[in-house]
Length: 304
Image 1 (tube, one colour):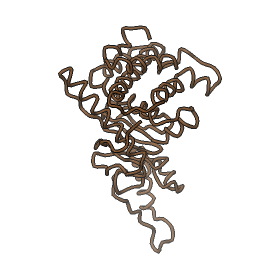
Image 2 (tube, one colour):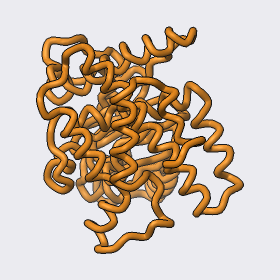
Image 3 (cartoon, helix red, strand yellow):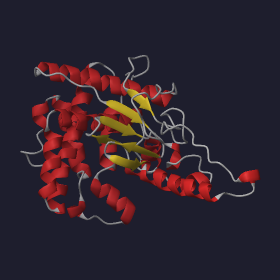
């Protein structure tokens, strides 16, 4: 993908390494708390023990594990991640951050145009870079869960180490494979703006797990198709290089539910699928790429 030298989005928030600002380890934005020692420094007084007990439960209530801090982990959140705030400093200037910011900018331009053509205004999401674990409006999440979109705060969350995992573990290397992942999460933001995601979240509360999984597949496959719509217009700009489309389609194949289950446990459990099979993910991504039309991304009224 020919991304270098293009506009970078201002909607990047960096929560890596305590990006939330000064204060407690992990970037929670609190002021340091001084714990008094006993007289002469020889042990802890009774009042100090009371303070420590209160502090312990206060930290636990905030989602911080004091035992990890005492163990020398350097952060109340594993991996050094933190809770991002609106006042978080701008992202660093490393090449991966520049790439993510550029891809996000390209999604902004495309979706602004698509929404404008329909007489609507596109509200840009924020993208939060984190490391290890992060707190969002949707609760705590770790790198193990992969990139995600939180409708509660309208932010995409990304630990870029996932891209290394894609290349090493999933055999899905390439910058356009990475761009597809970002575009898929932005696709969920589009679903949120258009009312699809809120409706899904409401409906699944009264569904069995099997039915909720089926509906979840349709939501995820539509996000794949929306990523394809973005890729369609990105190709029209002349930004794709030879092999880029194949990179994205390979990534969709490698992260299909059936392929992942075969790789992880050696067998598949179709009733547990909630993102779509490899063939389904490739099909809907390709559908969006081919037409660039939202109307061709209706996974709810068409066979998937």
